[in-house]
Image (tube, rainbow, N blue to C red; front, side):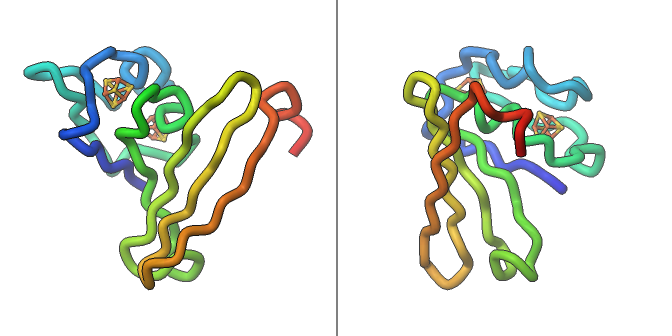
Length: 103
Ligand code: SF4
Ligand code: SF4
């Protein structure tokens, strides 16, 4: 799996760097850089923590079409996950972070 950093949306806050369990993200020139994308196992922690929606996780071609991506935004305890499918559709699922270990 791998993550895309959207440079124009990144404010260089470092939240993604801090949360990545594999240490795969670093801040360079005020922007997030995915250092070793081939080692990403798709935990989605970085996209969940990004305050600006600047990270997207590539999803399986079978699920989202080639180039489909998953983004996330948080509002309090609610996390809004948006799958941006290759055909232009957007599919939204909202979860509650207090129940995240339930799924
Ligand atoms: S999805 Fe997980 S492993 Fe991959 S870059 Fe983000 S935090 Fe790191
Ligand atoms: S958490 Fe988001 S805004 Fe902050 S450095 Fe990472 S990609 Fe940029």
